[in-house]
Image (cartoon, rainbow, N blue to C red; front, side):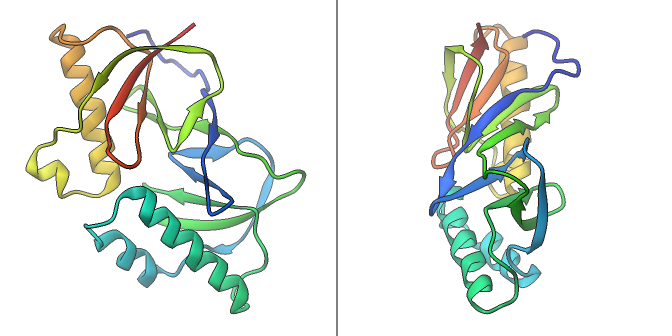
Length: 182
């Protein structure tokens, strides 16, 4: 694993219901916020649904955001940003052409691609299953991702996995692909 100083890692985020969905990522293009994607109560309802995958929760969030437009609570939007740290969701409108380009979050010194793919060329150097402790598996998404990063770093330290530059975490299974940039 190489030092990740202040480098920026670019990605293309996934779309959910035709809407660019920024989670563990921030848009590169200029934008303005048009309002909350969902209310605080709706966020709680989405978060406590332990049966749904992150991808299914994202679909529900986009549907609720589109409903807020129909109800006149927010104006039309181009994308949704989920700030996992602050547990906030925002509907945004790009100032120019809508874009799926993003800078990904660095978690514990490791770039994490979640519901996004790196724009830079890379090679897969390994995989990690989604084995989690009971505490991590019952936690919020941020807790789970932090656990995945810490686990990867420990496995690297113990020479159980190959050296890597970043992680791609599958939003359905939380299985992790370790990558090295070319």
